[in-house]
Image (cartoon, rainbow, N blue to C red; front, side, top):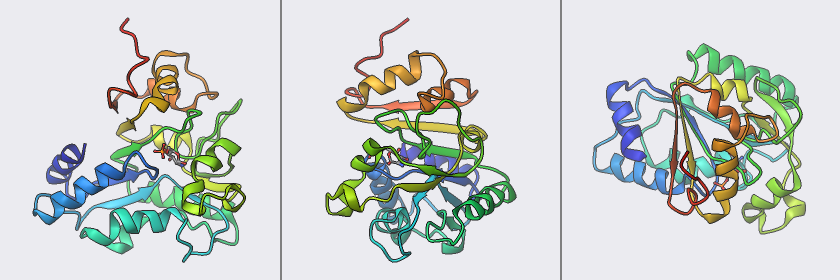
Length: 230
Ligand code: GLP
């Protein structure tokens, strides 16, 4: 995965990347940092847009996704800080911030490669299962399960996990020229099977990736366990 991104960056040093948080991409970030230290990947001209951010945390809070990205990638590679973008969760108006973020992605020419994870309920970014989903970057309300999955960054205390976030919309993600979905571990096996083999529905936001002409899915054996060949 990291090698694939390194190749993409070699081919197009000005790549615009969509980046995820969560446990799943941590080994990928570790590998990218290693490749960078070995001089095998150069981020100096790349631009990054993270998928989402919690609303309401002060910028210096260690639970923000901006802090996660600093810890796992930004502080260790030669990305230009001015070209690393994470929605501002502390903006006075999350709605205005979401519109600003969407406009910035458009101004950058859209995402070349969106790397995404999948929530246990099928969410991508923080687009939770719903009867309909906003296409563009938006303010979203988090499900309890999604907040619980993030509790570790808040001392394990669910009550401390924000209830709202700003997330790229499903349209923003699907507009990326390439989408790479990462999933690992047995606890993702059911939702991966639903997303890849089930009907396309906003009740399983990741199933919308079936509509993307250049989406790839990278799974470990455990996450792929419930996929039957057809
Ligand atoms: C998080 C993020 C998602 C991520 C998902 C899975 O809360 N908002 O972008 O893909 O949930 O996280 P994990 O990789 O820890 O399972």
